[in-house]
Image (cartoon, rainbow, N blue to C red; front, side, top):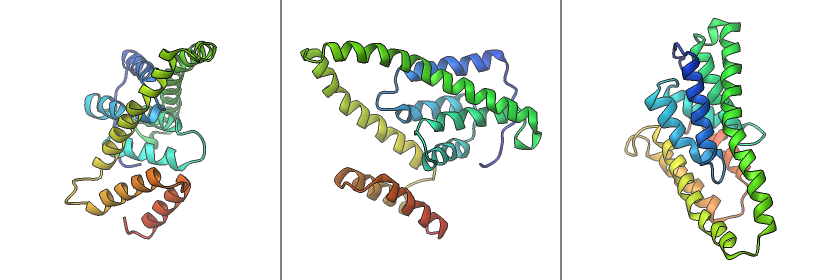
Length: 202
């Protein structure tokens, strides 16, 4: 995954990352992937704990792997820890910090939303006929869509300008249109994208 940064993170930095992921957990309406733009702002632009390439590669790797899409949080935390340990070449100390970063990120993103979801779901199920509950569910749909569009924009923008990489932007738009207008399973699109990349066309 691209070059490693060499960081000097202290306890305050780790705690700040933990609390930031906890706050994002409460904003992750529609899944953790919708908070990727703010993760990019915090980890790449503000703290400089990850490179732009590491950020986009972390999401791409986790999305291509089997399992929940939440795994990209673990990869982001792993890369922050490995960078803090001096890179993959630093050996066991970097791997230990990678595991610590992964644990901090995952517990931070999971704990608040899991607790809130458990409590809110029980309440909403018991009061599912209330107009407020039905209105809340309908009102969340456009917010989730907007957050997903923002995430797609961040990931696409990491590959350069529209004029320079028009074919990647076109592929992104076509893929979004196919997902929106057809019932084609997303794994077929991921497989096609992997094949195009393997052939060197994108």
